[in-house]
Amino acid sequence: MSQQNETGPLLDEGEAHPYHVHHGKEDSPFVMISDHAGRMVPERLGDLGLPPDEWDRHIAYDIGIREVGRHLQQALDCLLVEQVYSRLVIDCNRAAGHPTSIPPISDGAPVRGNQGLSAAERQQREEAILHVYHDEIERHLSRRNLDETLFVSLHSFTPAMQDGQARPWHIGLLHDHDPHSARLMKELLEGEGNLCVGDNQPYVLNTQNEYSVPYHAGRRNLPALEIEIRQDLISDEAGQRLWAERLARLLPCLWERRKDMA
Image: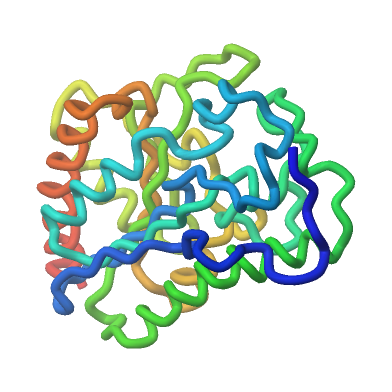
């Protein structure tokens, strides 16, 4: 495990930028983000004190969602902004300073490289990754016609946490300021047949628990949808393509229904 240096930049020259942007048609209504797409770690942080097998778990990244997001972006030809560093370095779906932003323990796994951090070390991660990622999203939103925009946040969730309690939902739709979009999408998904669709499950979306949707969409009252897909359903190429194709069919239907009801 490497030690973090409180002075100087967290990311050395040549290391990956905190985000990857996939561009699409400018007139597409969809702006997609993926807060937990990657699991990279800055070189100076080493392995954060975690053994290799922990990096394959959901604690490190949202399993399968990067591939789903990329297939979906290509199908919709829309903007997608991915965050490439592990949520264990800093969770980009948490506000700066949130208790779970840099977790010392994640689903039972001690993260020694996150324990006992100074305020300067925390700020270093926030400035190098968290703020840079969200500033890029803001840059794209600032150039758009927000009356013709649906903000879509892509995530995946583990079928069971360490306590073993099963999560039955195939997909969850999270919402706060915009329950309307979630309700319409739930109807569309249930129309597919045999899908268990969670309403604010397996998590509740609000300003205390999450950051990205409230910050970018909530304060603008921008139509928004947070999508959570169960990870065992998108752990391989077939599942990833199936869910991307499904969402590529249904998201335009959702958008048309919103416009018809406006």
